[in-house]
Image (cartoon, rainbow, N blue to C red; front, top):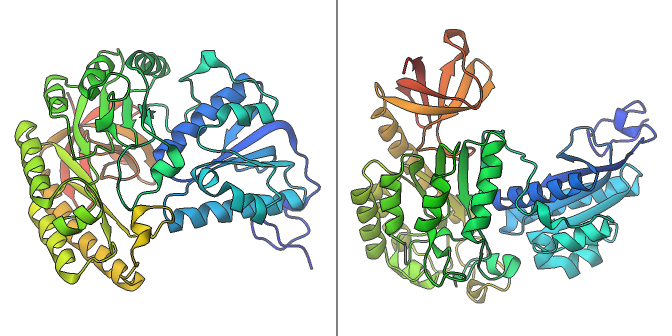
Length: 455
């Protein structure tokens, strides 16, 4: 009977992975888990490795790399488990001679390094979220300062995640990000403009601005909120046709950002603002610095200032002490607010956070039930809003071809998480990474179907 391959799970003497492994010297496989901030960090790491003459791939299908670097997530239970499972898989592969070296970086490594070193000794070294130079030194590579901002994109060439700050100063009770990412640190405007120009020169047309908290941008280095000023500079970069805002914090939201959004055609009328809950009692327990009433006023002000803006939010179900009444308050608020896009997590009880002091007294089953109820409600809202787009035309950026369709997005949608526009391949041809005008013919809960029209 043959051995079971760790990679393809086949039982065979003849599985390609089970042969005497011919590892490619100086080949590095970077595996990324978690959010867009981790994707960004992996891209920066890969650019540095390539400049040091490493043959580097992202999530290689060949599994023939000498070195594997796993960029982990430590945000909530499910993400932590996925990261641990991935580390164990490659640790076992190392033990079986399928890789030579395994290194672990990112949020899980930052948060649980001591425990991981004890539990998984097969890993050659663990690194924190701000230890890129030390990781490179371990690989006998130089940290090349002239490459700051350079990245090997793992996304399609026409869009890129664009991190404008690291860390977070907010005191949210449920969140471990400050533990893993440290205090807020803004990247200076001139550096970001240089990065944007470099990306535009490589064909990037859309920048998705990310940070733990976009709206805090500039307070540390300019002593004022400077997101609007940054947006003006980025908007002036030739070749950048869409700029999209992710992860804004509602408390202290800089309303001048909306003025720039109105003034500049290449700043998408789109705002991702995680609001976390719709009950004032729970928001206060979460230490969010706001109330449901203030949140509703903010949403109304944003929609009044930028008519047609798409608002995306993220919520948490099952926070400690969340009663049926608290949940109903959130449900009714979502029903009234009619967000264009919405996601919801079930609460994860995280060590060393303020909320960890409280009893996690909402059962997993009830957390899931409440999250499902919110998503069912949002599905209906999304369907109604999509029906209003039928017989209207939109500028669409096409991301990929899949099955019978070319698939793209409007300015109101971010990749991976939002709605998509599907155009039949047999009706027309579009080039991936190009913009086209599309007339929407029909819609369902999360997708729009349309035909290309002449400009």
